[in-house]
Length: 251
Image: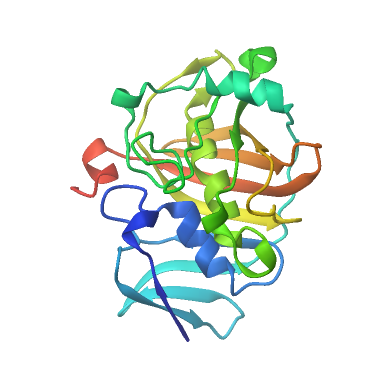
């Protein structure tokens, strides 16, 4: 059993952890690709227990409550979207939310209210050449304070960087090319890390795209490449449409 504390810095909604970051923290206990399911909003600044289950899975517990479960998984994508650094920077200028309209302005990953070096400040927008296919892109330059052993970005920050872009992609409709602003919460995330970028490092490129809808569930995938086009990581996510009060932890 290992104690994990999700510091307030790593929030998504105001009073709970960013989903990708929390998934990545639990996935540290699982070699290779992993799938993590969020069962409850991860509380901030609270001692949580990471506990190994008999079947090789892991649980993140808040007392008797199971916050998340994780297991080893093969994470393969049906398609892989790429973008050049120039294309990703152009997409960022088309970000889907103005700062004053952002649903979670203090989110660790995508919040525009977070200072440089504090939040990841990843702002996805549509690729112009793929506008009708709803592919989003952004750049990410890892800050030195994200480094773990050996000067590489800690794995939970790679998970984090792939989280919010898939949430925005889940609100894209590839058939119509339209975008809606439905509040979403991450329900499940799978990721496979091929290589972690150094920190500091040149900008990385994130691409994200929707893969399906089923009732309140929306699915999306994402990829992280370095500036030279080398694949660093991939992710698959399932998001759940919720009311705004639920998103903010009021429901």
